[in-house]
Structures are given as structure tokens and as C-alpha cells.
Length: 110
Ligand code: HEM
Image 1 (cartoon, rainbow, N blue to C red):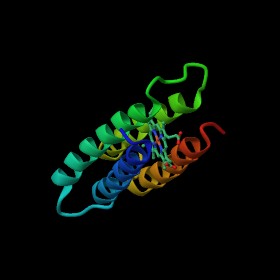
Image 2 (cartoon, rainbow, N blue to C red):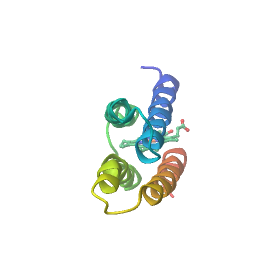
Image 3 (cartoon, rainbow, N blue to C red):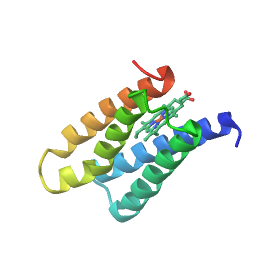
Image 4 (cartoon, helix red, strand yellow):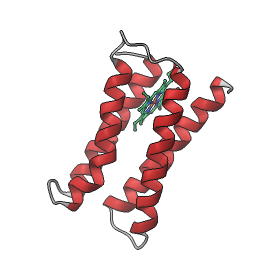
């Protein structure tokens, strides 16, 4: 597939992911649909991320760190639900983690 289209889809997934986090963590009336959007967009970000990579470069740690960030953002709603952290703190950490993931994607490293 066109590499530019794949990047576009990856960023589209990220946008939907953060929209769902806003709805889940800031409260709202559509938490169920927000959770569904969270799951679907997480999957898109992951699958399209690996589609861009084609063959993950084993010697380069940046994409493995992104995988860890992806996992954290995936677990974030549960952290708030189980009262491990306050929802605004979880959202703030997700935004910082998302920025770090974007940096790693753009620079392919540090
Ligand atoms: C929620 C976590 C993630 C966020 C917020 C995120 C965000 C981004 C952003 C903003 C870009 C830059 C797009 C561009 O400039 O075209 C990018 C690129 C990329 N991301 Fe992610 N990403 C995440 C997770 C992942 C995962 C899990 C993988 C797969 C291991 C991945 C693989 C890539 C690749 C391969 C690129 C393109 C690098 C290049 O241009 O050569 N990302 N990501």
C-alpha cells in the first residue's frame, strides 16, 4: 500500500484514539461507544504501524518503545476505572506519552 496513505491512516487512528480517551476520561454520556472507538483505533494504530514497518528493525529500539506507549494508552481507561490514578492525571500522561510516540515516529529514534 502507498506509504503516505499508511501514515495518514496511522495518524487517523491516533486522532480517533485521543478522541475516545477524552470521552472516557473526561466523562460524558457515550462511554460505551467511546470504549468501542478506543479498542478499534488502538487496533488500527498497531496494525498500520506494523504495516509501515513491513519488517520491524530488530536492532532499533524506537518502535519497541512505541509498542510500550501503545500498551500504556491501551490500559489507561482501566487505570482510571480502578482508581489507580485520577482520570485527569491519566489523560495528561496519555497526552505526554502520545507526544513521545509521535516524536519517535517522526524521528525514527530519539
Ligand atoms: C498510541 C501510540 C502511537 C502514537 C500516538 C503514534 C504516533 C505516530 C505519529 C504522529 C507518527 C508520525 C506520522 C508521520 O509523520 O507520517 C508515527 C509514525 C510511525 N509510527 Fe506510530 N504511533 C503510535 C504507535 C505505534 C506503534 C505501536 C507502531 C508499531 C510498532 C508504530 C509505528 C510507526 C511507524 C513505523 C511510523 C512511521 C515512521 C516513518 O515515517 O518512517 N507507531 N506514529
